[in-house]
Structures are given as C-alpha cells and as structure tokens.
Length: 545
Image (spheres, rainbow, N blue to C red):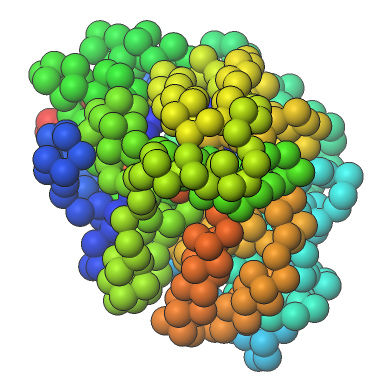
C-alpha cells in the first residue's frame, strides 16, 4: 500500500480497477457513476513500424533510479525499461519467467531459481548468480534503507548454488516473497557496477548497469531522462521498436495536458482526470484504459487520536458520498470501493473474484447514522487532521469531500497542505506522519495477488503507516501466505478482507481503471499498471507503417 506522487483517479486510482474474470480488465461502466462508458483492454493496438524516438511525460521527476529505493510511479516507470526481475508480470496480469528461466520449491522453505543463460548487462558483461545474490541481499541490508526490506522478512539466506543457480531459504513459508520477485524485490543489477558506483548509484551522478531493453543514456536533473535501445537485449519478443525514449517531467496537470495536445509529449500514463474529457475529444490522440490493482483509500496514520475509536472510523466511512467524489475527482470513471484491496487485485485467481469480492455489499452512505456513531464515541467536535497537497487536483477534491463529510457528522476535519515532495515523504518517512490522522493513499498491488495488499496491514510491515496491529489479522495472514495454491489462498485472503472491513484501518473510497494517453504517431503500449515493471516502452512504435 503506497501513495504515488499523484493520484489520477479518473483513469487510475490508488490503484484501482474492477477486473473481469478472464483478462483482469475493468468492466465497462455507464451511467452508474455519472460518467461516460469506458472499456478496458491490457494493450493498445500493436505498432506498425519503428521509430527513431518518442517523448514520454512523467508527472514528476524520479527521486531515484535505485531499484532498491524505487517505491513510486516515476522511478518505476523509467526503471521498468532498464532493469529486470527474476520473474515478470505480463500485461494481462500473469506471472511468467523473467531472468529466471525456471524455479523449483523442493520444500515449503526453499526456493531454487535457475537463471537464464547468456543474458548480458548493458556494459556487455554476462549475468551470473553472483549478481543475483548481490542484488537481493542489498535490499536486506538495513544500511540500504530499502522500502522493500520487509518483503525479505522471512528470508534466512540467498546463496549461489551454481553458476546459474540461486537458492533462497526461508524461516517460514512465504508465497508472497516468491511473487514479489516479479517486482522491485526481484531486480537484478550488475554487482560490479553496484560496488563501483557506491553512494552515487541510482542518482544523476551514477550509471545504471542492468539487462533491460533500454539503457540509461543521460539524466539531466530537473529536465529529462533519456534511454537508448539495448542492441544486445536477450528477449527477441521485446526488442525495442524505438531507438530512444526521452522522459520529461511536468508536475502541473494543465501543463501536462497541454504537452499532450501540442505533441510536446507523445504519451504518458496516469492521465490528469481534470483533462480527461478534453483529451478524449481533442483528436490529438487516444485515452485508453487498462487493468489496475488499486483503490483510492484513506489510511489512518494515528490510532491514538479520534480515529483510534472504531465507531469514528465507521462514521467517517458512512459519511463519504463516494458517487459524487467519483464525479468530481475522476470524471465519473470509477466505482465505489467495496474493500481496501480493489477488485483488480484479485486477478491471480479470477474464478474466485465473483464469490469473494463481487458479493461484498456496497459501502453505506448514511449521514444520520454516522452522526450518531460520533456522538456515541464522544468524539463530537474533535479534530481530525488530513494531509493534502497541490500535487494533483484529485487530492484536493477528495480532501475537501472528507472535510465536508466530517463537518456533517460532528468531526472537525482540518486540512494540512504540504508540498508535493513532503506528501510523497509520508509514505517512506515515519517522521513525516507526525501530527497527521489521515492520508489519501493509492493502495496498489505490484502483483495480481490480493494477499499482497493485505500484507501491508500486517504488524510491523513497512506499508503499515499507522502501525495498526491485530492478532487475528496477523494469524490469518500467516495462514494465507503459507498456502501455495492460488485458489485456496484467495479464499484465505477473503478472511483478511473481512477483518479489514470490520476494523477499517484503511477506509475504502473508490476504484478506477488505469489510463494512458497515446498521441497519433505512436501505439503499442500496455495500458495497465503492469507498466511499473513490464518493459512497456519496448512495444511502442509507429502508429502508421
């Protein structure tokens, strides 16, 4: 569960999507939320030719290109094309071999990965088991301060057991650890380059040496990042169709939309919701919607204040007019969230989604009942501090809606504005959360397993921002995380969903599909949240032959 530097709920959400059973795509919606209908597909039409280059818009400059510290959309959007993982999540939300060509589990606490032979780093050296060991154990080192460190909490050792074999031993069974090797925790970089770069690794001063279809050519801090095609890339199916990609950084939502309209940027993910209709009707390109694994939530940061009382949390949830929030913040493209983990997060076992998610009741909207709960809790007039930011219009829209809801039921919701960088810091720096009761989050999965989201509510997890702790929840999580069968694990995850809805450490708000804008000269991009790890830029090419 994390919050990106921007929330584009109209076409994304923290990270939200309702997925169909077969493809993980959001179901078309019409009328129910007041917006136009939309369709969701995992990819855009395939490219018809190659390009010399294209320009891609990011809503903010990456704060790092260090895979171990990348915990947000901008850095992962770039790194997805430069560095690779042992496993790979595909555009239709499946997990397949990546730099590991196969794996075995001789017992519940042992994982053995056979590496793909002949894979070259960007400097021409060959990837070996030593590089994998160095890459993974670096994230386990407290000195690295990796936000992904908690993913390794059950790892006892990572060892080279052959030139192209790595064995990982666990203290107890951990299904999620294996799955997360398709995300940042499974990233493999050159051990020699790590040692050479030292503290400069992942900064504008330090070079990257990975295995992806593009290499880092230049990071002009404050201006742009340029990637160059890797002519020796190992995967013939993903040989880049463009010789280079230039990333530009535009924080202002209107300016970003203008960049799309003027063709200063050929495309970009997470389209500003305030410009959605304008871009759809402009004739300058296409807005496409893709699979998502996220929901916009309110994460409780302080359980010692008013929100420590479950009645107050329930009251605030009941006071949210989610349908009007969707109209104002998402252009009507979305649905009220039924649970903290979105419907899209259930893609690993889609046959279970209907029974385990769809049958959940719609969130209740009842001002009078909410007001009564606040009174019963003795919380009338008490202050709840919600952090907001100019980072994106959607943040302000949701924050204002929460403030209005609080006013209606007797809570004094104070909005605390912070700078965009400070807003992002809330999700990586515990000190930045001091004095705050609530934050608007983008709670998304990096994998198509709903258990991943609920991991972030486990006692002590890095993503458990409010330090919520529940013994029943922790025990249920451990049971689910030791079940290797995806279908059975989904049923066990439903118990976590039940506890989370009962206790509301996170208040669900709404879900929406992912979005991408493609100018008229390009096509071929995956449309969904998989872009955070899948080498999406490799498939983008010319729209015309």
